[in-house]
Length: 130
Image (cartoon, rainbow, N blue to C red; front, top):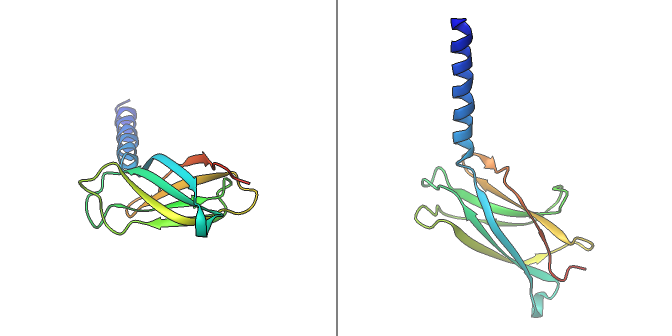
């Protein structure tokens, strides 16, 4: 019986520990797409708001990406060049994103240096998509 209790407590510790790690992954709080007018008339401007407990140069949200809804084709990427330790949440934009014909929604994914791709994604509908 004592072995069972020790094994159970060890499993609870592992599960709780894994939840703590997941709390450090990038969260996508918001994403907005706007058609661009003028020179890039078929392009979109994306603004994405992320939240992540950046710790410094070894652990920070380093990019967000735009994917087709099926997650198979990357359409765009916004690289984040530095940690945002004192700026949370934060919003960054990417312009000139060409959307393949027939795509009316896109999937936003985020990435950080420690945990790689976050399981937190956001599917958004494109305004005026053809």
